[in-house]
Amino acid sequence: MAVYLDCNATTPVEPSVVAVMMRFFEMDFGNAASPIHDYGLFARTAVEHARMLVGKVVGARPDEVIFTSGATESNNLAIFGLVDAGQKSRRRHVITTAIEHKAVLEPCEELSRQGFEVELLHARPDGRFSPEQVAEALRPDTLLVSTMHVNNETGVLQPLAEVAEILAGHDAFWHVDAAQGYGKDLEPLLNRRIDMISVSGHKIYGPKGIGALIVRKREGRIPPLQPLLFGGGQEQGLRPGTLPVPLIAGLGEAAKLALRDNQERRAKYLAFRQNACAALDDLGAEQNGDEVWTLPHCINVTLPGIASDQAISALKNVIAVSSTSACTSHTRTPSHVLKAMGRSSAQVESSLRLSWCHMTPDVDWAAVTGILQKLR
Image 1 (tube, rainbow, N blue to C red):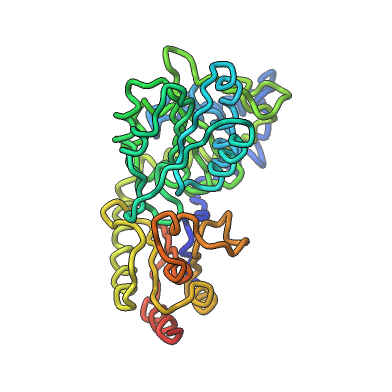
Image 2: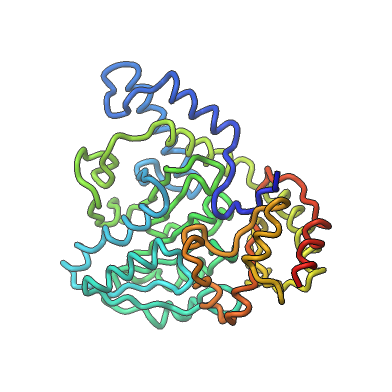
């Protein structure tokens, strides 16, 4: 069977995460909103324990963690949740970047249709947006700045520390889509100037269908968000509905392991990367994104003379890879991230993304290079 190298799309689930979830599927299946008996009480206890574990990764308090269905919902809640506050305060200026995930770009497009002014910042050839552009774009009526932590297509870490300094004296709310970096690159997300952080369970070896929006308090209050859904009042009134206790417990376990095993996992990422890069270098691969800023579990490369769709098909029995974000791969549209970085259409159409994890087995790189050489 092919070795799975598409962990930026979704990761395998840690065995201990599966074990934790099965307990709540099979035995402790109570509703966390019904602590009137032991089943419900234990479910609520499990949820609050997971809330603590998820927040601990970024230095957040348990009451700053709002469970959602995943980072896409968290992004939408962070963006659309501020619409009412923006209209009331007449602050309708929003800043984001051209390399964001569609789960940020499309909500921002909808904000534009609702009368907000959305300013889209360019990306540099190294795969990062410019913090200087953030400083230049910032205005008194800026309501929201939404930037990603790590790019999902290139693995490039974005300049969060610099943005934090720029926003230090401004009232704008800052949302960070951390789907790709939460639990992997720890330090940047500890900065409490970040008001909202989007988290996804299935990017950190947890289950699909669960995530969180971490909402940090300012002067004792979370950002003035309004819910997208109504009915039930769960999650501080921001996300109603019966809590999926097995998924939440699984996310908590995954968060615990991400923090505990961070350095051990990083060492395995780096060892795998060394072999991958050596093989790709033999093919004349050109990396998309400065290696200095690229996290060790991912690489995006252009293979001159080899069409990405042909490469993916030819390699399918050896390695499973992708050429773009999982959320847009079905559309066959060129990567908006690589285009924003200034890559030509020919380069974009010859690019592959390989992403791995600490559980990824060894790859027969000789077989990979042999197959790709025949495509030239």
